[in-house]
Image 1: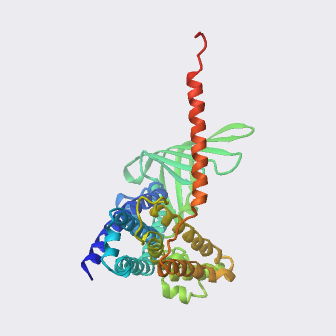
Image 2: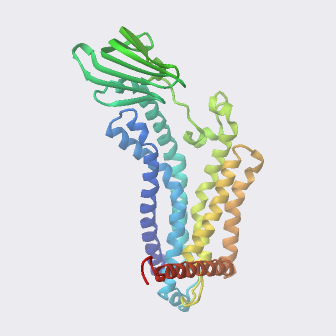
Image 3: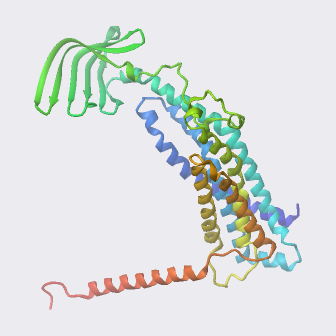
Amino acid sequence: MKVVEFYILRRATAYFVATLVWVLAIVWTTQILARLNIVTTSGQSAATFLELAALVLPSVIPIVLPFAVGIAVAQTLSTMNTDSELIVISAAGAPRITVMRPMLILAIFACIASFAIQNVVVPPARERIRYLVAEARADLISTIIQEGTFQKVDDGLYIQIGERLPGGLLGGIFVADSREEGLELIYYAKNGVMVELGDEQVLVMQDGVIHRKTADGVSVIRYKSYAFDLSEFKASSNSEPILSPKDRSLPYLLSPDPNDPYFQGKPLSFSAELHRRLTEWLYPLVFALIGLAVAGDSRSFREARIHPLLTTMTIAMFVRWGGFYFENRISKDASVTAGIYIVPALAIAVAAYFIATNRVLELPTSVIEKIGNLWSRARNRILSLRSGISAAPTEGQP
């Protein structure tokens, strides 16, 4: 690799890493917050939360990688063009491949990483997440007896234990049950105990009252002993979680088990996931070629045009939206399967055509200019209205 190519690759890699880290941090945070209730509602430890957060990360990386590559390519070339470096390279007689090769190397590396992560790292990570959720569900009953905290067992059902007493007894039991429409039940007991009767989990409450509220009024029932069945909320620790196509390995998607209950219910979803795995890893290369087609030429920075980064990301978002559209469609209609391959192939062909013919891929400036003019008029109108309001005399002034 030539010195100038290594220089370009180093700059592009720096932009790539910086973009990947920050965008990945934002997306990763949103994904973790969406799963935070799994830990909080089941009383799991901090170690479980950290493990869950680490397992979510691999599934986020392939989504962010193409955009990081596109931003790195467009920003690197745009900066080099502004600093007249592209003009110097071109004037020195260097072929255009000198600028393209470092970007393609970065894109190919990202493609390989995306394919490996999606097919080697993500499936076992997602499977482990399924087991963590199943274990949290299985441990739900044991976490209910945490003293001093309200625990949500189900929609409309909450249990609180005041304290633990010697001999496994529980003191100060409070149960609020509003699962049945038009009926609210509140149980209170001075003490109680968790009892397992075979496969059933029962909370036996002693010396308490039941407040029963209906549309007709409120009634109070006092009892010496009352058994509250919690077995329906206890999942078997030996039960296998149901794995979706995204949790399966690539060999399994190529030959699914016909006895798989998920496959029997939604066979097209396995086909959709297989085609997604075979095409999604191409998007880093697609975005890199779009960036090269947009910003790979040496042009005067004084020339009026839309910023190459904005143009690259706009076109890339449109292409990626097309891919997402067909990914969602083929799980319901197998006749559109070819579309998931056509979108990246067509984008590569169009970008390659612009690069080969030394043309610049740009957004229609007329549309952008019209939008800009409308925005300027609206802004000027708002400013004039504000000036008129501030200049008007207030009540009581001459």
